[in-house]
Length: 168
Ligand code: GDP
Ligand code: MG
Image 1: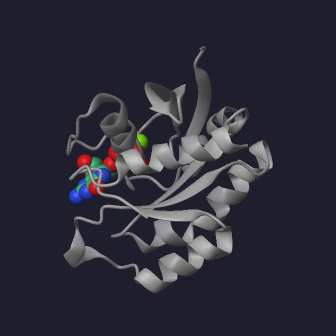
Image 2 (image 1 turned 30 degrees about the vertical axis):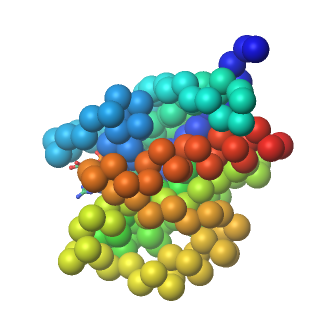
Image 3 (image 1 turned 120 degrees about the horizontal axis):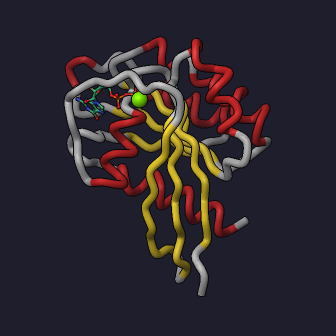
């Protein structure tokens, strides 16, 4: 059987861990080095999901308003979306709604997951578990808490999106 291609966009404010998540998932590596992403790039990984070969193409977007014009064009054609914020950054949490609107404007309603990253930084967490849950319900998007650093739940994010897309 031929592979199913799925294009996934990962959006959210700068420094929440989007590039790290893509690296972790596709290359199995993590680095502390912070590089501000310029423009857009993608990595891919093939998985077996419900008997299908699924090729996930993960698009990395800048996450900076100044690159809005570039990144918007790449949302087009995306079949699934990761909305990412950081446990340690309230403004990244508050920006989730506007990221969702931006993706929806280009893609319509697509399978979406809300990711709270950096859960390893327990002492620096500024997000109440209840408000994360409320946001998840308001968006109608499943909440998955991850640590890209400790490799917690990263696979689950993309597995969930793949199953949602295959079910459509
Ligand atoms: P992006 O701007 O959203 O692409 O964020 P990056 O992937 O560049 O990550 C920003 C910084 O957060 C980097 O220094 C990463 O090493 C760090 N980082 C990413 N994920 C985690 C995590 O789960 N835990 C911790 N402690 N640091 C993380
Ligand atoms: Mg980046």
